[in-house]
Image (cartoon, rainbow, N blue to C red; front, top):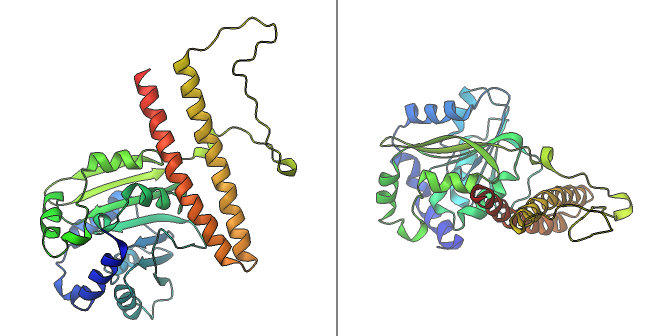
Length: 296
Protein backbone atom coordinates (compact mmCIF):
# COMPACT_ATOMS: atom_id res chain seq x y z
CA UNK A 1 0.00 0.00 0.00
CA UNK A 2 1.25 3.48 -0.82
CA UNK A 3 -0.16 6.91 -0.09
CA UNK A 4 -0.69 7.80 -3.75
CA UNK A 5 -3.10 4.86 -4.09
CA UNK A 6 -4.91 5.99 -0.92
CA UNK A 7 -5.33 9.51 -2.31
CA UNK A 8 -6.63 8.28 -5.65
CA UNK A 9 -9.04 5.84 -4.00
CA UNK A 10 -10.66 8.42 -1.73
CA UNK A 11 -10.68 11.15 -4.38
CA UNK A 12 -12.67 8.75 -6.56
CA UNK A 13 -15.23 7.88 -3.88
CA UNK A 14 -15.60 11.35 -2.34
CA UNK A 15 -18.63 12.50 -4.41
CA UNK A 16 -20.77 9.57 -3.22
CA UNK A 17 -19.25 9.25 0.25
CA UNK A 18 -21.97 10.96 2.30
CA UNK A 19 -24.80 9.18 0.51
CA UNK A 20 -23.26 5.80 1.35
CA UNK A 21 -22.93 6.45 5.09
CA UNK A 22 -25.00 4.56 7.67
CA UNK A 23 -26.19 6.45 10.75
CA UNK A 24 -23.91 5.43 13.62
CA UNK A 25 -24.96 8.13 16.10
CA UNK A 26 -25.26 5.87 19.20
CA UNK A 27 -21.83 4.32 18.57
CA UNK A 28 -20.18 7.67 17.80
CA UNK A 29 -21.60 9.11 21.01
CA UNK A 30 -20.25 6.15 22.96
CA UNK A 31 -16.82 6.60 21.37
CA UNK A 32 -16.89 10.29 22.29
CA UNK A 33 -18.04 9.51 25.84
CA UNK A 34 -15.22 7.00 26.26
CA UNK A 35 -12.70 9.57 25.01
CA UNK A 36 -14.11 12.35 27.20
CA UNK A 37 -14.68 14.79 24.35
CA UNK A 38 -16.29 17.87 25.78
CA UNK A 39 -16.52 21.66 26.16
CA UNK A 40 -13.54 23.87 25.47
CA UNK A 41 -11.34 21.23 23.88
CA UNK A 42 -9.26 21.64 20.74
CA UNK A 43 -9.78 18.64 18.45
CA UNK A 44 -7.68 17.24 15.62
CA UNK A 45 -9.71 14.90 13.39
CA UNK A 46 -7.22 12.82 11.36
CA UNK A 47 -8.45 11.48 8.01
CA UNK A 48 -11.61 13.50 8.58
CA UNK A 49 -13.13 12.62 5.20
CA UNK A 50 -16.08 14.86 4.39
CA UNK A 51 -16.39 15.95 8.03
CA UNK A 52 -18.72 13.24 9.27
CA UNK A 53 -17.81 13.82 12.92
CA UNK A 54 -17.79 17.63 12.87
CA UNK A 55 -21.42 18.07 13.95
CA UNK A 56 -20.88 15.65 16.84
CA UNK A 57 -17.94 17.72 18.11
CA UNK A 58 -19.99 20.92 17.90
CA UNK A 59 -22.83 19.34 19.86
CA UNK A 60 -20.34 18.94 22.71
CA UNK A 61 -19.27 22.60 22.65
CA UNK A 62 -15.64 21.98 21.76
CA UNK A 63 -13.53 25.10 21.21
CA UNK A 64 -12.10 24.26 17.77
CA UNK A 65 -12.03 21.41 15.28
CA UNK A 66 -9.17 20.93 12.82
CA UNK A 67 -9.83 18.29 10.21
CA UNK A 68 -7.06 16.93 8.00
CA UNK A 69 -7.36 14.53 5.09
CA UNK A 70 -4.81 13.44 2.50
CA UNK A 71 -7.54 13.26 -0.19
CA UNK A 72 -8.05 16.60 -1.93
CA UNK A 73 -11.64 15.78 -2.86
CA UNK A 74 -12.57 14.66 0.65
CA UNK A 75 -11.00 17.75 2.23
CA UNK A 76 -12.66 20.02 -0.33
CA UNK A 77 -16.12 18.64 0.48
CA UNK A 78 -15.50 18.90 4.23
CA UNK A 79 -14.45 22.54 3.84
CA UNK A 80 -17.40 23.42 1.61
CA UNK A 81 -19.94 21.84 3.95
CA UNK A 82 -18.61 23.71 6.98
CA UNK A 83 -17.36 26.96 5.48
CA UNK A 84 -19.72 29.09 7.57
CA UNK A 85 -18.59 27.63 10.91
CA UNK A 86 -15.70 29.76 12.20
CA UNK A 87 -14.22 27.27 14.66
CA UNK A 88 -13.79 24.53 12.04
CA UNK A 89 -10.65 24.40 9.90
CA UNK A 90 -9.99 21.83 7.19
CA UNK A 91 -6.51 21.02 5.88
CA UNK A 92 -5.71 18.94 2.82
CA UNK A 93 -2.49 17.21 3.75
CA UNK A 94 -0.63 14.22 5.13
CA UNK A 95 -0.78 14.30 8.93
CA UNK A 96 2.64 12.63 9.07
CA UNK A 97 4.21 15.48 7.08
CA UNK A 98 2.19 18.52 8.17
CA UNK A 99 3.60 21.03 10.66
CA UNK A 100 0.84 22.19 13.00
CA UNK A 101 0.94 25.47 14.91
CA UNK A 102 -0.44 23.99 18.12
CA UNK A 103 -0.92 20.82 20.12
CA UNK A 104 -4.38 19.40 20.72
CA UNK A 105 -6.47 18.12 23.62
CA UNK A 106 -7.89 15.29 21.54
CA UNK A 107 -6.75 13.52 18.37
CA UNK A 108 -9.34 11.27 16.73
CA UNK A 109 -8.78 8.71 13.96
CA UNK A 110 -12.23 7.39 13.04
CA UNK A 111 -12.86 4.72 10.40
CA UNK A 112 -9.42 5.32 8.86
CA UNK A 113 -6.61 3.56 10.72
CA UNK A 114 -6.09 0.62 8.28
CA UNK A 115 -5.39 3.09 5.46
CA UNK A 116 -2.11 4.28 7.00
CA UNK A 117 0.87 2.31 5.63
CA UNK A 118 2.97 2.50 8.82
CA UNK A 119 0.78 2.32 11.96
CA UNK A 120 3.72 2.53 14.37
CA UNK A 121 5.04 5.70 12.77
CA UNK A 122 1.54 7.21 12.77
CA UNK A 123 1.09 6.66 16.51
CA UNK A 124 4.49 8.26 17.16
CA UNK A 125 3.50 11.30 15.08
CA UNK A 126 0.13 11.63 16.81
CA UNK A 127 1.82 11.39 20.21
CA UNK A 128 3.70 14.59 19.35
CA UNK A 129 0.46 16.40 18.54
CA UNK A 130 -0.97 16.19 22.06
CA UNK A 131 0.31 17.64 25.30
CA UNK A 132 0.84 15.37 28.30
CA UNK A 133 -2.67 14.62 29.51
CA UNK A 134 -4.07 14.89 25.98
CA UNK A 135 -5.71 11.90 24.35
CA UNK A 136 -5.42 9.95 21.10
CA UNK A 137 -8.26 7.69 19.99
CA UNK A 138 -8.46 5.16 17.17
CA UNK A 139 -12.03 3.98 16.61
CA UNK A 140 -14.38 2.31 14.15
CA UNK A 141 -18.14 2.22 14.12
CA UNK A 142 -18.19 -1.51 13.39
CA UNK A 143 -16.46 -4.70 14.48
CA UNK A 144 -12.93 -5.56 13.43
CA UNK A 145 -14.25 -8.48 11.41
CA UNK A 146 -16.78 -6.26 9.61
CA UNK A 147 -14.10 -3.67 8.80
CA UNK A 148 -11.74 -6.29 7.37
CA UNK A 149 -14.56 -7.84 5.35
CA UNK A 150 -15.57 -4.43 3.98
CA UNK A 151 -11.98 -3.67 2.99
CA UNK A 152 -11.51 -7.01 1.25
CA UNK A 153 -13.24 -5.71 -1.86
CA UNK A 154 -12.51 -2.50 -3.73
CA UNK A 155 -10.49 -1.13 -0.81
CA UNK A 156 -8.12 -4.10 -0.52
CA UNK A 157 -5.30 -2.21 -2.24
CA UNK A 158 -5.51 0.65 0.28
CA UNK A 159 -5.95 -1.23 3.56
CA UNK A 160 -3.55 -3.10 5.83
CA UNK A 161 -6.40 -4.73 7.68
CA UNK A 162 -7.37 -3.69 11.19
CA UNK A 163 -4.98 -5.05 13.82
CA UNK A 164 -6.28 -6.54 17.05
CA UNK A 165 -7.03 -4.11 19.84
CA UNK A 166 -4.31 -5.79 21.89
CA UNK A 167 -1.70 -5.17 19.17
CA UNK A 168 -2.77 -1.54 18.82
CA UNK A 169 -2.60 -1.12 22.59
CA UNK A 170 1.02 -2.28 22.41
CA UNK A 171 1.76 0.46 19.85
CA UNK A 172 0.15 3.02 22.15
CA UNK A 173 1.96 2.00 25.33
CA UNK A 174 5.31 3.77 24.82
CA UNK A 175 3.39 7.04 24.65
CA UNK A 176 0.02 6.59 26.34
CA UNK A 177 -1.73 5.15 29.36
CA UNK A 178 -4.38 3.10 27.55
CA UNK A 179 -7.65 3.19 29.46
CA UNK A 180 -10.10 2.24 26.71
CA UNK A 181 -9.81 -0.99 24.71
CA UNK A 182 -12.99 -2.29 23.08
CA UNK A 183 -13.38 -4.75 20.25
CA UNK A 184 -16.83 -6.28 19.95
CA UNK A 185 -19.60 -6.83 17.41
CA UNK A 186 -20.66 -3.17 17.45
CA UNK A 187 -17.44 -1.16 17.60
CA UNK A 188 -13.68 -0.96 17.95
CA UNK A 189 -11.84 1.60 20.07
CA UNK A 190 -8.39 2.01 21.58
CA UNK A 191 -7.76 5.25 23.43
CA UNK A 192 -5.12 6.53 25.80
CA UNK A 193 -3.86 9.57 27.68
CA UNK A 194 -0.42 10.96 26.82
CA UNK A 195 2.17 10.18 29.47
CA UNK A 196 4.07 13.01 31.13
CA UNK A 197 7.51 11.75 30.17
CA UNK A 198 9.08 15.02 31.32
CA UNK A 199 8.37 14.05 34.91
CA UNK A 200 10.80 11.16 34.54
CA UNK A 201 13.56 12.88 32.59
CA UNK A 202 17.08 13.52 33.84
CA UNK A 203 18.09 17.12 34.46
CA UNK A 204 20.02 18.52 31.50
CA UNK A 205 22.39 21.48 31.59
CA UNK A 206 22.38 23.36 28.28
CA UNK A 207 24.54 26.40 28.94
CA UNK A 208 26.28 27.43 25.71
CA UNK A 209 25.21 24.18 24.06
CA UNK A 210 27.10 21.98 26.52
CA UNK A 211 25.19 18.99 27.86
CA UNK A 212 26.37 17.77 31.22
CA UNK A 213 25.64 14.14 32.09
CA UNK A 214 27.24 11.97 34.70
CA UNK A 215 28.11 8.40 33.75
CA UNK A 216 29.59 6.17 36.44
CA UNK A 217 29.93 2.96 34.46
CA UNK A 218 33.21 1.06 34.88
CA UNK A 219 35.06 3.76 36.87
CA UNK A 220 36.79 2.65 40.07
CA UNK A 221 38.70 5.47 41.76
CA UNK A 222 39.80 3.46 44.74
CA UNK A 223 36.35 3.30 46.27
CA UNK A 224 34.73 0.01 47.14
CA UNK A 225 31.33 -0.43 45.55
CA UNK A 226 29.16 -3.24 44.22
CA UNK A 227 29.23 -3.83 40.48
CA UNK A 228 25.76 -3.86 38.91
CA UNK A 229 24.70 -6.97 37.06
CA UNK A 230 24.94 -6.76 33.22
CA UNK A 231 21.14 -6.90 32.96
CA UNK A 232 20.82 -3.92 35.30
CA UNK A 233 23.36 -1.93 33.29
CA UNK A 234 21.51 -2.65 30.06
CA UNK A 235 18.17 -1.58 31.55
CA UNK A 236 19.78 1.57 32.94
CA UNK A 237 21.27 2.39 29.54
CA UNK A 238 17.93 1.86 27.78
CA UNK A 239 16.19 4.04 30.37
CA UNK A 240 18.78 6.78 30.01
CA UNK A 241 18.55 6.78 26.21
CA UNK A 242 14.74 7.04 26.26
CA UNK A 243 14.79 9.96 28.68
CA UNK A 244 17.71 11.69 26.97
CA UNK A 245 16.13 11.34 23.53
CA UNK A 246 12.75 12.64 24.73
CA UNK A 247 14.39 15.80 26.06
CA UNK A 248 16.23 16.50 22.83
CA UNK A 249 13.18 15.74 20.67
CA UNK A 250 11.31 18.49 22.52
CA UNK A 251 14.25 20.87 21.97
CA UNK A 252 14.15 20.11 18.24
CA UNK A 253 10.40 20.80 18.16
CA UNK A 254 10.98 24.15 19.87
CA UNK A 255 13.70 24.99 17.34
CA UNK A 256 11.40 24.05 14.46
CA UNK A 257 8.68 26.37 15.73
CA UNK A 258 11.22 29.16 16.13
CA UNK A 259 12.34 28.73 12.51
CA UNK A 260 8.73 28.76 11.36
CA UNK A 261 8.06 31.97 13.30
CA UNK A 262 11.13 33.52 11.66
CA UNK A 263 9.74 32.81 8.20
CA UNK A 264 11.46 29.53 7.37
CA UNK A 265 8.67 26.91 7.20
CA UNK A 266 10.71 24.62 4.94
CA UNK A 267 13.43 24.23 7.59
CA UNK A 268 10.72 23.73 10.23
CA UNK A 269 9.17 20.91 8.18
CA UNK A 270 12.53 19.18 7.68
CA UNK A 271 13.23 19.22 11.40
CA UNK A 272 9.75 17.96 12.29
CA UNK A 273 10.09 15.13 9.75
CA UNK A 274 13.34 14.17 11.45
CA UNK A 275 11.70 14.35 14.88
CA UNK A 276 8.90 12.02 13.74
CA UNK A 277 11.40 9.39 12.65
CA UNK A 278 13.46 10.03 15.78
CA UNK A 279 10.43 9.47 18.01
CA UNK A 280 9.54 6.18 16.32
CA UNK A 281 13.05 4.93 17.16
CA UNK A 282 12.67 6.14 20.73
CA UNK A 283 9.32 4.35 21.03
CA UNK A 284 11.06 1.13 20.04
CA UNK A 285 13.68 1.72 22.75
CA UNK A 286 10.97 2.33 25.35
CA UNK A 287 9.12 -0.83 24.31
CA UNK A 288 12.37 -2.78 24.62
CA UNK A 289 12.88 -1.29 28.07
CA UNK A 290 9.40 -2.36 29.16
CA UNK A 291 9.96 -5.88 27.85
CA UNK A 292 13.37 -6.00 29.51
CA UNK A 293 12.13 -4.93 32.93
CA UNK A 294 9.24 -7.42 32.77
CA UNK A 295 11.71 -10.29 32.45
CA UNK A 296 14.00 -9.19 35.26
